[in-house]
Image (cartoon, rainbow, N blue to C red; front, side):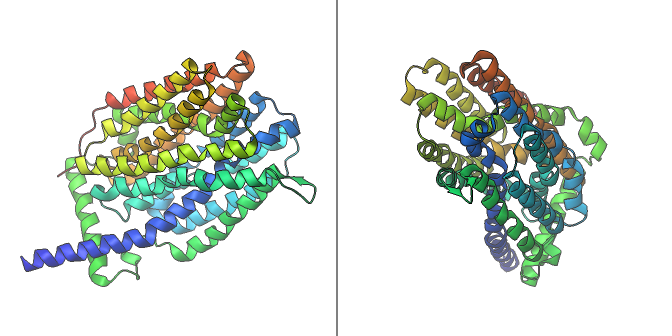
Length: 430
């Protein structure tokens, strides 16, 4: 009894120390990443008018990022697994920060396309790399909560980025418009944090000198036991994982969900402004609402999913809720306050989908296969960023109305939810 009690105490101390050291830093890094990725949506409140871009040009330019983003997703995730997470993630951050700064100087559609194209290459594999990195430190039973903490940075980035964008859009320093300063100033933190990452992050628990020896040995043993248990259930090779019907279903669901969510992320400032006619400052203030809804939804949904050990309904329900909100916008177009409320809630509800979705592949695959599979799912799914943004730009220009875009977003959410509910995934070993 005494030995079991000691092990429990060591495990509790180790989990607490790891969470306090890693999760705040991972959260901060992802906030900076997401602000840099989507600041173009706020810049577009002025940028397209200044540079003479149509909706189709803007949508295509935003989508260019996702075409090249897929190139290094799979090899990047494997690099994190087999080489060094801290070095690879640091490289990504420094390069994307520099390119973001340079985006502030674009003058034409071709330069805008090129900047987004190169940014996709630079930032590729950041997210799957972070997911794989968390599997090095958190056991399966705590993984959904850890991923929820990572993903909470997405709505948190809006809480921070929205008011900053609202302020910067109104400045005009050194003959540069505010939307240009938005790119320039928000690229600098990524470079700084990239340098810090090299010294702060630790690749593996066995290398963690900041953990006491007993806690380090406990964690290494726990993760090793989980790996062995998973191998007894089924030892996947990478190619077998790629051919698994369940993985194909996850890819299709992720693609559809991102088609809607990434389309919404890059267009929601424009949607709100066109629906309401509010000022830039008021638009960026209203966008704090989906951010706050998203933070609560992600943390509660991730916690409840871990508590009940259920993934499918916890993943599909946010998709169904978000799709319903976008469908209701069409019915409420004449009631502007109500339509704005549905738009903000629909954008916020979806965030709860992310952490539970990524718990699914990590609970059914061995480590190397999971690393590659996460890269595969995310890389193909990220093409939804191109499909969603270019599709919305096309629909807006073609119909001269936002209704077609809202219907498009609702349909892809419903389809993604249907695929998740139809998926039958083997549970993790007990």
